[in-house]
Length: 173
Image (cartoon, rainbow, N blue to C red):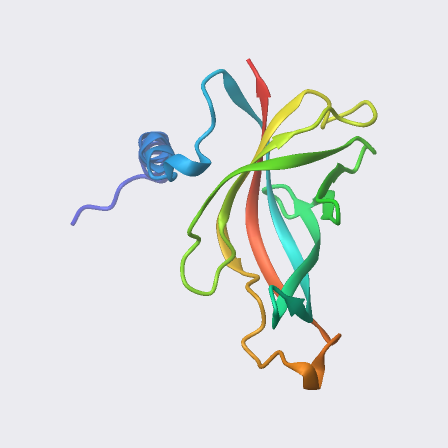
């Protein structure tokens, strides 16, 4: 096979990348697909932890979601915000923040928290979160409730699990 010049490889990779994006968008489950009229405003990777507590729920002990604590990083790995709760709050490093209401979920695969679509409440403060309409969580890794017994013997115990997910922020337009 003849070697391609580096510039040709870069152009080929860029073209394949451009072609792959629409295909990737088509692979997003309909339950977490954005309504028409929204454009991507910011893409981040959330890296952090989710806390669960062993509590009574619906008459039986179960691991109950208590909240996330994650860094929101840009494509270069630089922290550009935080995700924490409750309530679920996405905060930009510029101080602007949003909360939201879940409008859809889809299976994230075995051992992964679900994919999610959240309708954003109006932002607090001026900055990157101002005008955000939706937050979409994709490509989840980990984060599910602990795989250990939850019973009267460990009622009130907390466990922290690591997770990662892409958080995409959208604005109208």
